[in-house]
Image (cartoon, rainbow, N blue to C red):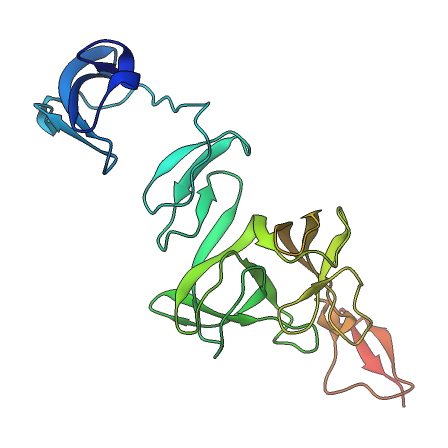
Amino acid sequence: MALDNMNGGGLGGLHSKQVGRITIFFDGISKTEIFRIDLDTKMVSFQGLTVEEATPGIDHLQFDLEHPNLDPQEGRMHWNADDGSLDFGLPGGNVNLQIGQEMLVRVKNTSGGEIVNGTVLRIAGAVNDRPEIEPATNAAFPGADAIFFATETIANGGFGYATAFGLVRDVDSDHVTVGATAWLGIDGAFTETRPTPPAFSVVVGHCVKKHATEGVMFAHFAHSPRLSGLSDVYVVGTPTNGQYLAWSTANARWEVTGP
């Protein structure tokens, strides 16, 4: 795809609502058409090019590798030189998806309060085919089944985006050392200190940048299973003092036994 100013000099000479030419390449065949660019609205309109005329199959799209990064805008795609990926603006205008480098899910906040960017989340239900989320906590299960970081602040009852894998930016990570493992804490918080049993141990990611407001966390989740949760361990009820696990050949599993 090539753009030219009809007055010469390339796009640098274009003024608001000036006309130029665009050449689009389809399967090795080029087609030149008139376009009109409005620099006030940043909209481009075309004359004469119809879907019926276009040969199916685009050879390639080339993005401007030197263009400065843009703030999120819904439906807009551009090259992100810092991350080496394409950014795609998601609904709400607060989040850019770095294509191929992170996994995001659109969720609904039904926790009863605002969820701040960087909060560790769990799924609490579903509505309109979307996960309902609330802050996770290491104190109990369910509750410790953390799976997301909020990647934007989400109002109570509102929709937003949560990250299951990838970088989460502009969070408070001032309490975590760069490169350190982050563990699930209480009420959606994360900590550098591994929880002491019986609290659940859940890795939520690593600190990439330490900062009170511009911190960056790399989100990835790993749950440390409890002994009673292992697939070959059978526990009924709550174990009591002095009980232990013994192998049952008949049932091919470890079972609680003892006084």
